[in-house]
Structure formats: C-alpha cells, structure tokens
Image (cartoon, rainbow, N blue to C red; front, side, top):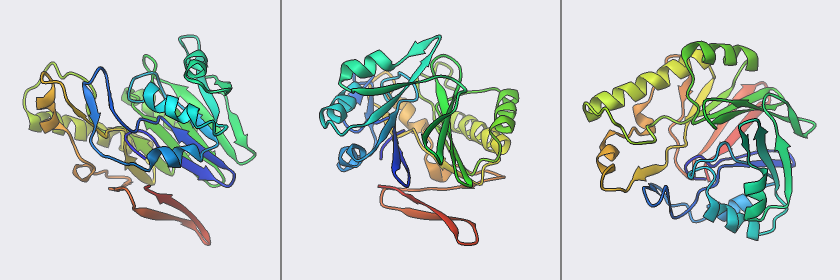
Length: 259
C-alpha cells in the first residue's frame, strides 16, 4: 500500500502491516515519496494488523488513529517480549481487539495461516508467514550478521518470497560519496538474498525521502528497486497497480496485487 505497509490475504484472513499513508514522521524529517489515496480504505477491509517495531514510519500514530476510528473490528497482533510491549500504545490509539505476540512462538490466524515473529537488534522484528505450500518472510528493517542470517534461514526453511528494506534509514555520518553509499547498499542486499535463497524478492519499506535541510542531500544516495539484483532470487520491481502471479506448481498459483 505504501512504504512498509502490505496486505497478505489468504481465504478469510487479510493481514495488514505497518500502515503509514500520509503526512510526515520523525518530526517532519521523513515524508512519503509516493501518494496512494486508496490505501486507508484498503486497510479498513483487513482482519488483522501487525506493527513490526515502534519507529514512527511503522508505528505511525496519525494513520493508526484513522484506522482505529473506522472501527472495522481489526484484531491487532501486538509484539510482546521482555524489551517491548506494544499492547498499551495500540490500545491508547483506540484498538479494542488486541492479542499479545511473543517471540518465536507460532500463532494461527486460521488453520492454514501461521505466523512466527523473530526478534532482531533493538526493537526490530520480522515475521515468517506460513501458508499452504507458500512461505513469506517479512524481513522489514532487520539488520543481522551473515552467520545469524544463515541460522535463521535454516530454521525457517524454504522461503518463497522475501520482503526487505533496501536503503539507509538515518543520518549517514560517514558519507564518502553517493556512489559508494549505493554500492554498499547493493552489497548488503545481495548478501541477504544469497543467504536466504528465496524464489522471489520484493524490495519495500523504503517509500520515504529525507525532508530536513541537514539530511536532504542523502536523497541522492537512495536506491530504487531497479538498481537491485540478486544471483539466486528473482527481484520484482513493482509499482502500484501491478499484478504478479507466481506459479508454484501444477494448478498452484499465488497472486500479488500492488494496490
């Protein structure tokens, strides 16, 4: 829908993530690169909501309040562990149906829709989504060393679709040149995709631009999906309105629609 917000639908379940659809965040330091005026209406139709971590571009209170005011009956899956509990902030926003989501413990949203959350450094976390014969890893903003990525990939098993951030998301203190920064980002992306070995990769969670005068120059060092490639996975360069159908086997397809 925008930035890090996606909907994954399977039969009666539609899982929404990280809605930020308008305005700025980080006190005006970030703004959305793309406009999608239909995003909020699409989000209101979902059955479940998950917030990956409490940064402003993921736990975006203005958008979440609009969603809660719609009173659509969303069930919120709130990260709950020793260092973070998102239940109370989401309750204060106005959501009523909230269930805790601990680390590394499976939750079934339906008999055929299983999710597991894996923590990362600080407050970041990722979600593995297990559907019949189809697995999605929403890696989001997580940052792991190579050995940890290797261990994680073995634990999760075969991954069909990897969704991951692919750009910088903060003040770059060592800024040699735009091209060097971009090359470092490309290498980081290749390392991740080579280790995970998913069938497809969807670059996302980077729909912002820097709007503070002190960081606006970093916009020249931002990658676009077309800049990315992987030696082991197909990288999908998608825009709103695209539909992509994955063939999983005889008479078995899965469709991604970019709304």
